[in-house]
Structure formats: structure tokens, C-alpha cells
Image (cartoon, rainbow, N blue to C red; front, top):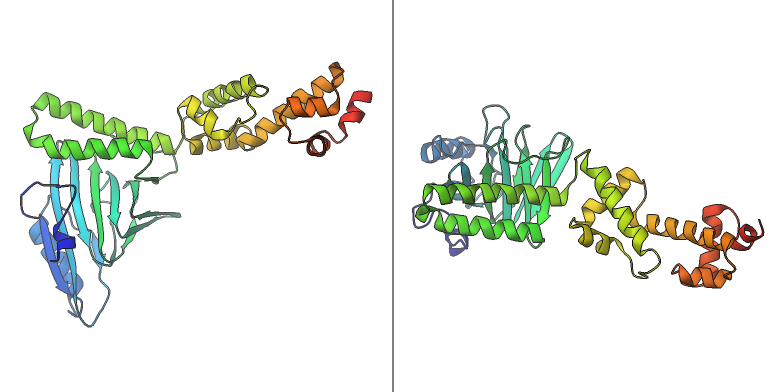
Length: 325
């Protein structure tokens, strides 16, 4: 194996030898059977074999190498694989009923289950439920850290089997730092400290999922109400009001905020802001002596003509007509 295969920044498993270290010639007519047999021999029950299908080449060998480590009931693997396709196999299969996360360092994983597709390229992680079987494809030279969690450890949204995130997102950075540290010091921890580290890791996994998705029927309306309240308070005072500022004030991701508005307002965040500014501007046109230009400037429209166009589109008449009425 070359240095790219043998070196890992994660140090999963410490100095212990790999749990799997297999090379199978692509030209071998029985390559898939040989790979499965060798995987079962080396991995045993600790590393259940997925269903694998190797491409056919006239030369070279498929290589797979796995280092493994258990952090109480959290199983971690540092994986290297050349190009291969396969599946989890459903009941009785690979990590059945578990939550499996691939933290891709190099290369790419592609997953398909029912009508859902997910991709985990370099710099991306993918959290998946194994409640349903998955088909997958691995690109040549792919390295990933796989984390297998108990089935009840993380709750994914209903009708969602996978959640992806960038390594650089705040929630992912915090999770990855915790995982690395836990793996590094696990052998030195007393039982109470190890349990605390395990629980903190699971909380960070759930936090990552929540940061990327929202599926709580009680939380969604409450977040929408908080967001609209924040917007109302700043419609007049903040000319630079935008979705990111609202999301940061409420400690949620912009993506989550977009989903909430799509569900509750059937519009984007900024469309909602514009709508409310137009309604407030209309009330002032009717109740004050401010000119159309003054009202447009007060409610942060770029110029009078832009305001008139937006106003007419919203109310079906010009600002002047509203005032006369």
C-alpha cells in the first residue's frame, strides 16, 4: 500500500494494525467472491461485510483498508477504498438500523435509497439512517471516517434518510473536533468521563442534523413567529435587513430559516420583508402627508420609480391612487 493509504490524520485505532487490509486483482474472475470471503475472514462479526461489486480491469488490484475503534457504543472507522459499488443489504445487512455518517476526506461517496440520493464529496459529511437499505458507489482513492451510532442516538426528520453538511460549517467543525479528541483520549478516560464524552458527541450529532433540517411541528411555527417579530422590529430602522442577519439573531442556519418561511409563509424571507414594508408604506400614504418619495425612502426602496412599480404589483394601483382613495 502506498503512503496515501497508510497515513491518516485521524489516528483511528492508534498504533494497532488495520482491522481490514485487502487487495484483490481486478482481473480475477472470482474477485467479488474473494473480496467478500476475505472481508468476512478479517472483519468477522465486528466489521460486517457489505454487498460489494468490483469493476473489471485487466490489470491492477482493488484495495481496501479499515482501521476501527469503539468509543463505548459509537463505532469509528478510518476507511480507504478504491472504486467499488455495493449495498447495505437491508435486514441483517451492513450496520442494520444504525445511523451511519461518512466524513469524506478525499474522493467521493454516492448513496441512493428509494428516491433519495446523497453525495459526500471531499469536505462533506453525510448522516444516513440505515432503517432502509442503501446502494452506494465509491470513487477510486476515497478516504473517509465512518461513524456508526446507535439507532436511537440521532433523530432525522420524517421522510428524510440522509442529511449532508460541509466540514466547514460551525456545527460540523464542533462535531469533528469532538470526535477527534474523543478518539485520541478514549483509552485514557475513566468510565464516567467516557460516558460524558459519548453523550456530548451524540448531542453534537443531533445539533448538526437540527442545524441542517427542521421537522418539529411545534418548533416551526414558534421559529416563524420569532423571525417575523424580529423583522417587524427592524423594518424601518435597518436598511440592510437580510435573511442571514435574521438567522444569526435566532441562532439557526439560513437554510433552516428558508425552510420555515417556505412552510409558513410560502415565500422567501426577503419577499416577506418587502411585503411588510409595502403594507406599512401603504398605511402611511393613507394616514400621513408624507410624499410618495418620502414614504419610499422611509421604507428603504431604492428610488421612487422602484417603489411605485412594486406597490402597483402588490396592490393593483399606484401610491397616488391609494392616497386619493
